[in-house]
Length: 292
Ligand SMILES: Nc1ncnc2c1ncn2[C@@H]1O[C@H](COP(=O)(O)OP(=O)(O)OP(=O)(O)O)[C@@H](O)[C@H]1O
Figure 1 (cartoon, rainbow, N blue to C red):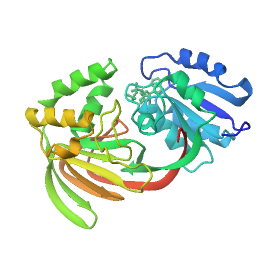
Figure 2 (cartoon, rainbow, N blue to C red):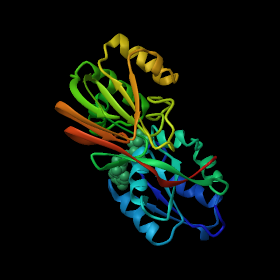
Figure 3 (cartoon, rainbow, N blue to C red):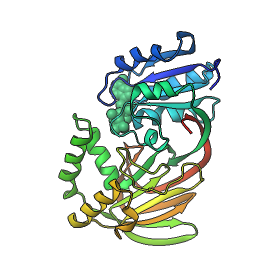
Figure 4 (cartoon, helix red, strand yellow):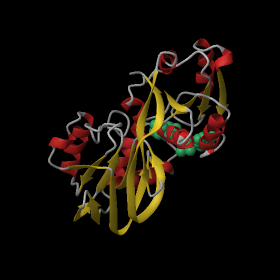
């Protein structure tokens, strides 16, 4: 980054556990005041407007200070602009930041900004909703919907919720079209990965390359409690592909039709229900500022 590059920090005061005020107070320790501005989001969706406006105003870098939801909102506002995305992780999962090797400590992430390098990564859409880390349908989407209505945040309440809802969720059937192939399958979870992990180092697609122009698709057709334990262990040890309970595909796009409407998410944020899905990759469509 050059000395003349200006940074707009967009802080989500609601994300994660650390307060926005802490981050705002730390920034002056790492950057001269002439190099940055700070704005706080006031409502869900606000970060997209703020990012778009910041890019128009000529900020070279727009930094999302929050979790994957905030990163998604800022990044979608930057698509097609001259501004690059930086991330100061402050969420509970921080999947994209972890994939891009951004330090989890706010102070280190801020310190690194001046030596980080610009590069480009792929972005994706699910039914026209942009995502940058992962999107998914089935149990993934169902949990994102239940979690959105849960007042408690954080990893522990997330795990408790997953365990509680696991037995309630009924999987469906899906007809999948990818790479000129058509097949039908039961579908408990279908995840579309741009980055390798959901967040919290839970690796749903350990081999995913965020710059290869391909989605890494993980299908878990059905899941008993015994299989779920193996899959959970596989997620945390980057060995999900060897559990025998998940199938993997790579493709620049995929079409899915489900027998009944299924809930879906984009970057962990619940979007809604649908019975037809089109997911595609937009190669190298977003500029980022990251450690190399
Ligand atoms: N001022 C605000 N008031 C209420 N909600 C907001 C505000 N600003 C942003 N949001 C919403 O907060 C949600 C959660 O943000 P974010 O994903 O950054 O945090 P998190 O859920 O704690 O982290 P992670 O996604 O890593 O688990 C986003 O969906 C965003 O739209």
